[in-house]
Image (cartoon, rainbow, N blue to C red; front, side):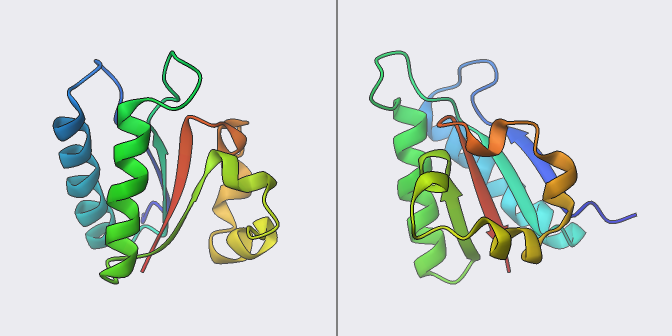
Length: 116
């Protein structure tokens, strides 16, 4: 059975930023091969209250991936409150997310990645 929503915790074990981003890049490739539609990336928010280095690097990496056409889009946790994000459109893209909304989708330490 194809998993349409994959959860990936890139902060697990507190890896260096480059290792976390490598793991994210690898998982995007594997998820696409498996036919997944969405990855819930847990990157944490950082202990200083302004976003940690893994969170910042994740957003930068995903911006590049989007511009290169590798991913369709992404929604950082703080984006859910924005007028730019239409959660219903995201749920239309991957209705399986509705079954996985465990609060993490609205968490500042989580980003939703929509795959092509």
